[in-house]
Image (cartoon, rainbow, N blue to C red):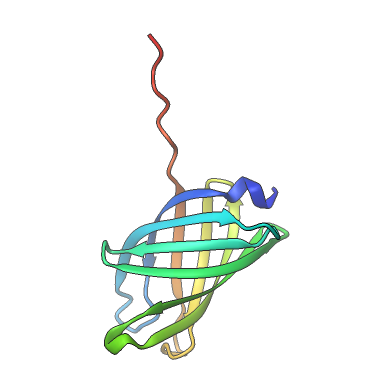
Amino acid sequence: MHSKDLVGTFSIIGSNQDADNSTYKGTLTLVLDATNRFIAKWFINGEQYQMGTGFFKDNILVINFNYKGENNAIFKGVVVYKCVSKDILDGFWSEKHGDPNYLGEERCFRIKEKKELLN
């Protein structure tokens, strides 16, 4: 698998880094920059944007991310995805100030574009 194989948009389901194991849904969009590094954009529960940059090697994608939370505080973390295939990513993540007793988890499924039928 190559970096370019992962470019696209994924539907995500995940659980947070907390004792409640609270869940979320959203999308993840992956693009490559000029140096073949990933630019990641998440949109969580229809209300929160997160951004990140990362790299890919040996079917592992690592992204450092950040987002603006309550009181405009900036939260930072890292997510590691095992690329099961170009269409399925299985990951875990942790935030700097998250509960160190837990890891968040995230599973991503490629959203395939519908091709128009030709008449």
